[in-house]
Length: 588
Image 1 (cartoon, helix red, strand yellow):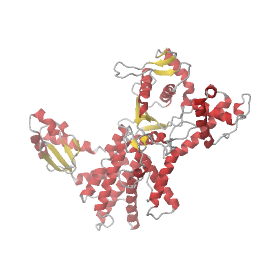
Image 2 (cartoon, rainbow, N blue to C red):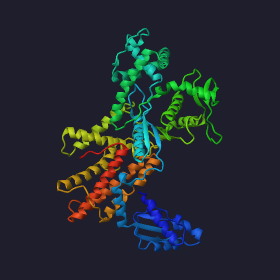
Image 3 (cartoon, rainbow, N blue to C red):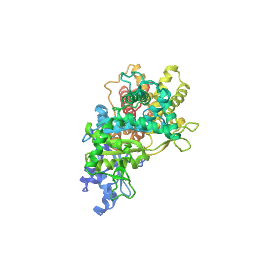
Image 4 (cartoon, rainbow, N blue to C red):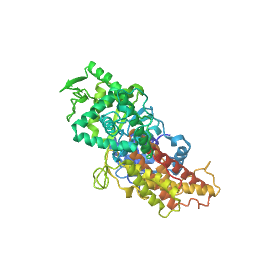
């Protein structure tokens, strides 16, 4: 099904042509004065110079051609030369019927389906997730779902930090606590235990203690670096211990990400490309891309057109050690070999813009990617507290993500229990679903690149532009449909009739914007467009609900038509919240 604006522009183009003007002048847009009209066309203004005619004369000629149009019920030429348009209720009905009957509501598949890899999450092994991880996870998950719905093949990769100095710090901290473990005995030849010698709680204690000590004690840091070297060199006991660290951490990460409905197709990390690095370094040297500068191996990525300084991309430090650049470039190399993506999207803090500019330029200059492969940096702003600074706990520390989720669920539980007859168990289940909507919608309704203030009272409100408001609207629709079924009505084979009042037409007008919105959200990797759409749709439905008798409608055919419209509204809203990564309960 074509986008509605394309259909309307084609119709308007025919009218311009019939009036003796260029059909390309017939571009139609949504009205910026909804109090005057639904759509508008400004082509007469653009054509005035070309045809040496007053815009109002051109607009009047075109309006004359639209008399009796099956598409527009009204086409008025208004000074100085605007065309104000209203859609025919009968034509709108046909669009809505088509939308209700077709898969994905008539969304056209892309001209060419792309294979897209999304790098999001970015958690570090052996460290708990904190609030700084929420945006990458929530935005990345939504972009993945939106692009999939739009018809692309999408692979999500968590890209774990599992191979750097933090691993050596954890191993050294563990050795201080349990020096007699067989993993530290280089003469040990037996099988290592299948169970880890620590819990996730102990692991999360070990890292910060070891990290703090390494900053104060140079000898301790040297030991941690030696442990990192042994791990990366393949010392048997250290590798076995590292696998335990990885398994225990990933199990906990999956639980925490799962509580936000965030899933990854790949759980790869920096360690997966460790063995590729020597090959990549040799390739860069042999082909003249990399050279030694002040002892380090670098690739120059500055371009003549640069207006700011872009430093060289460092591949190896002067001591031969690799960096984040090294593993990120080797990861690109591996992704191209294994998956051949058309596009790789990195959902990362926007403050890493320069870093990724260097990495992308290096990948292109060294031909690690095909010329047509798109490398996209989707930088996001910070989640701030009421003071406008990055969100902290009350005592000024970095809040763990699971604590933020728990606090939001508790707040939601209190609101759900107020004035609602619900068992505690049911209230807890509903609170969990609604809390996820509050967190995710509160984040995603902002343009990704912008900072936003985390306001638990506003995010958990059932009024305004919030996740709970959207869910409350869906639950209201479900309740009406449930009552209709209880009264003996069937939700199958319902026939839609033309809109019976202005609010019903406004709801239909909101519904038919779905395709345009979804395609735009996918092309621009912009989940906030989905949020803006469902807020408008929810408002349109609630205005319609308050001004229309639905179950009380006496005409059976009209009542069934209203129910059919509710079914479509419910389905579109639930599709939209699904691509945002949350779901609606049956009641609230």
